[in-house]
Image (cartoon, rainbow, N blue to C red; front, side, top):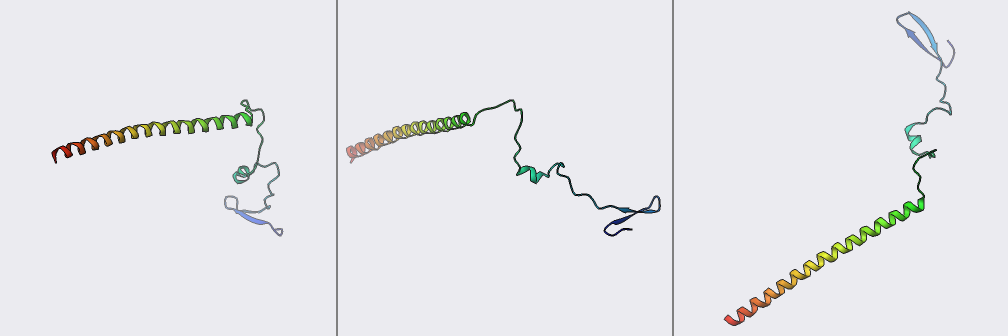
Length: 103
């Protein structure tokens, strides 16, 4: 048995054979999941293509629409709150007037 090799005993045949060391993975072997996650691979022949400028413009438009919607929603709630505050102020004024008549 040569140096640097392992031996394996086969019980069914009663023979001993030498195991050769495993060869290092070749460059053409599929990389591990960790290597793939950090590796850039360009997609070839993709059917759907959009420019980065168009995607950026769409993203900005969506954000502005969302911001505009939130501002409108806030204005609407503020208007309802102001109406409610005005109604409460009127009721307080009426209650004070009635109390002044009684007292």
